[in-house]
Amino acid sequence: MTYISKDNRYDTMKYNRCGKWGLKLPAVSLGLWHNFGDVDTIKNGRGILHRAFDLGITHFDLANNYGPPYGSAEENFGKILKQDFSNYRDELIISSKAGYDMWPGPYGDWGSRKYLIASLDQSLKRMGLDYVDIFYSHRPDPNTPLEETMMALDRAVRSGKALYVGISNYPADKAKEASRILKELGTPCLIHQPKYSMFVRWVEDELLDVLEEEGIGCIPFSPLAQGLLSDKYLNGIPEDSRAAKSWGFLHESDVNSAIGKVQKLNELALQREQSLAQMALAWILKDKRITSVLIGASSVKQINDNVETLKNLAFSDEELILIEEILSLD
Image 1 (tube, rainbow, N blue to C red):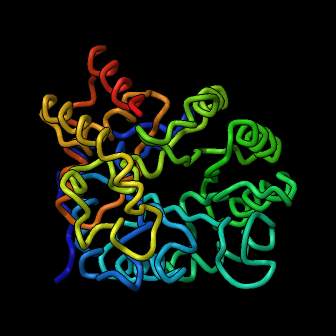
Image 2: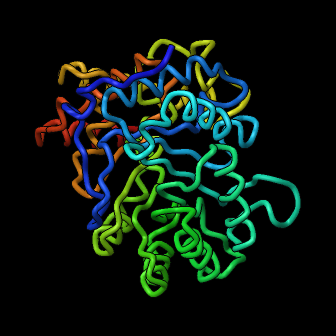
């Protein structure tokens, strides 16, 4: 059956500018880190993308090595894009990244010009695209001059293979230096993608201030701490959960060590008439320096629930104090 998006898809979604720049992203964006690899069901991924776009989620975020196996998320996304979204390409913001391990040998990892440009070419081929809207350096490379990595990003834009560039996982000092270099090259940094959640708060020390000063947007990944900040683990570890899988970054020990805080946060969320996931997303979006939150989803229901977050983004002073007290518990 041919997919036709809903006419009212832009009616309720909130869109925010990336820092000082003209590009707007939906307050909730969809990442394809999980659930779109060859180990997953493409029919399920297709339904997730359909529902996301119907709700105004225009930004789909990928990376070269998303899967598993590496590259399979981009390949599967490319199939769905060709089948269902070809008429909507100009309404989509599609991003990819390079910086982590992708292929064997000295040219398939980190931040060299050789790796980034080759990786972007491969990503475009897998997705069947002429360009991506945003291309990221996925992490800083301690053994490659920052100038070389930023020159590769600049080249991606000047060659027409990317419209904008961003950085991910860069600490505050490296982000500021990267921004300076990109400005000098004439291809300013649009956005930073750091890991940020109630449980991972390093960006609050300096990075958010740097991004505000530089006019760079911020789109945190793992805002739900790999699903830990949801109701999924309140009563144990489900067999189909990320923590139960042999791959991924959330483990049984992570769940066990945090469950006390999760349960108390869930009690507060219920008082706010939200799910824990909705409150966790709202807690990040309360900061005006945040452009969007990058969610993952394994079902259409999760897409629906996460977008419902936007109905209540306000916190009282008492709620914020209680959250800090819960998060500080041993």
